[in-house]
Image (cartoon, rainbow, N blue to C red; front, side, top):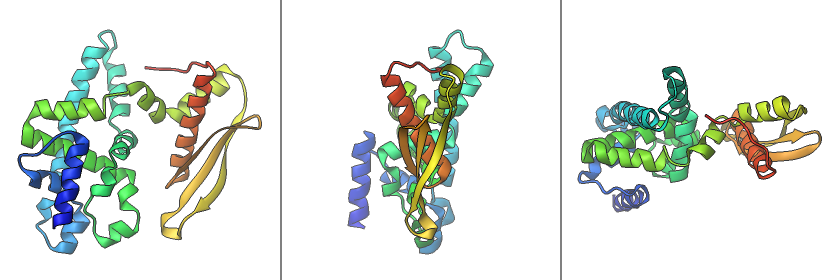
Length: 238
């Protein structure tokens, strides 16, 4: 129990918020597989907090976009919000915080790579928002969202849309051909890691790895875009 308490304190330091009720943070980090295995009340997992956090995140991100883009029509605002709070983008933010390392998982979920699965880390990110909202109110939840989700949006947007941005830049503007190549697969059968490169006319622009081929391609495309940006190329932005 002491180790878990220390771990949650470390997480509080990382997110920059100290809970008046630490049980809320523990609940936000608890997966249903853990409560089932430990025979804890089912409602003590993160799912209800995730439900609340999702609503808080939608409101805060909507207000942010409404104020930041005064001339943007409703359809574009909706599209931009969807890309900012979708599963891959929230998982990307959760990875920055290493939230997966703090999750309480059952053995089965642990053994099948739950700590790094986008769907789980995205859920936990929303659960943390819900926990902060209940513990400290909207202002504290807003601070967390602004700091960890709505910051550095240009680079995050570049990552979220990396494959489509790369396609538009290379095929649309540069008028060149490019392709993704699977370099290798590593790890045990139940927890494969895909290693992929993206190449343009024989030159490797970026390499990526991930639990799926699609995730590896996304990372490779992101690195390729950073390289091309350093070379002075401009790509679409919202």
